[in-house]
Every structure is written in structure tokens, then in C-alpha cells.
View 1 (tube, rainbow, N blue to C red):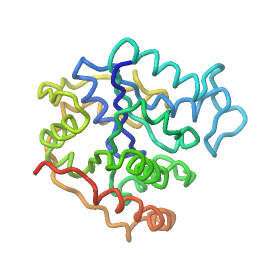
View 2: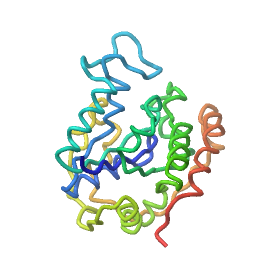
View 3: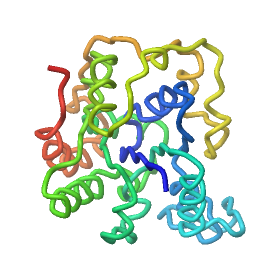
Length: 247
């Protein structure tokens, strides 16, 4: 079986932009939240806001997704971006041993505000921070050292250096040509959620370009965002101390 590089992120963490960059490489079979599709739209959905009549897909399960990933890895190397809370019931040492793991984190003041803007009725189980931390801690214990962690702000501030550091950490070559692309791409072609409405800005982008660090003042956010942020911030802070840097 070839390498399966798994980037474990949380919603609204610039992870799809990172995935889009990985797609430009051309040397990896790239998958967009494959476990998430089964969690939200499988034949027996697991997401907490599911109601009768929501979209389901016969034959699509977490287990069928895993079989498909393994079949792809028999043919060549795979990259997937996904969220740990979709599969926290599958974290056995044997299952986890199939992946080369990495983590993408982002300040919860930004992610939770963004989730709230898209889904004002979001369930706290969809935010993902506790499960991301739990998986990180489990892998650190199993392997005796922490897996690589990239912070979204670091990535956006110095994309070339941070992607190069990521590639080095997961054992793949850095390809500078993958850092830019022509606008007008169609991320929705790879997104199973409502035609990719979350990724409209990405479709008009031209690459991972340096951006000035931006801050969100959580004190100005709606009360629900503030309450969830207070519970999620310690999980983010825990992983932040392990982040890799470009220096």
C-alpha cells in the first residue's frame, strides 16, 4: 500500500485551500472530506442535526469510505483532508497506523465565527476541536512524538515556507509550482456539500499568497460564538504549542 497522507483539520480552517494546492501537484490522489460525506450524507447519517428527509446515499458508510481509500492507496499515494470528529469511533492503533498524520489548526475565534455565519444553528459536535486534540494526543502517545501541526495564520503569512515544512514533515517533495494556479477552478467538483457554496472565494483565487495576519475580536461576536469559543480555545492552545514553524 502506498502512503496515505491525512490532514486532520477543523471546519473553516482554510483546509480546502490547502487541499486545492495539494491537487495542483498531480502526484497524489486527493480526497475532500471522504469520511465527512458518510457522516453527513451516508445511508445512516451520524451528524447531530440530521432530520428525516435530509439527503442520504445508499451504500455509503464510514466503512465503505475506508475500503475505497485503501483501494486507492493500492494504486498510488493518497492525500485526504478530513475532520477527526467524523471517525472518533474508529481510532484503533491498527487503523491509525495506515496514515501519515498531520494537523491543521486555526484560532477558534475565526473558525467558530465563520461556522456561525454559515450555520447559525450549528451543533457544538460539528466544531471539531475536542476530537482534534484527542486524536493528536492519542497519536503522540502511540508514536512517542507529536505529529506535525500547522497553524492557519502561519500558513497564510508565509505559504511557501510553511508548505515546504509540511512536505518535509510528511515525507513528500515540495513542489513550488503547486503554490499558484489559474482562477476559475471549480472546487465544487470535489465538494459533496450543497455544490461547494463554502468555497466560492477559492474558485476565484490564484494561489496560496502571503496575507497579512488578521485578528478577530471575539468580544464583539454573538453570545453563542463567545460561549463555544470559551470551551474550544484550550484545545486549540494545546495544539498550538506544538506547531511547526518556517524558521
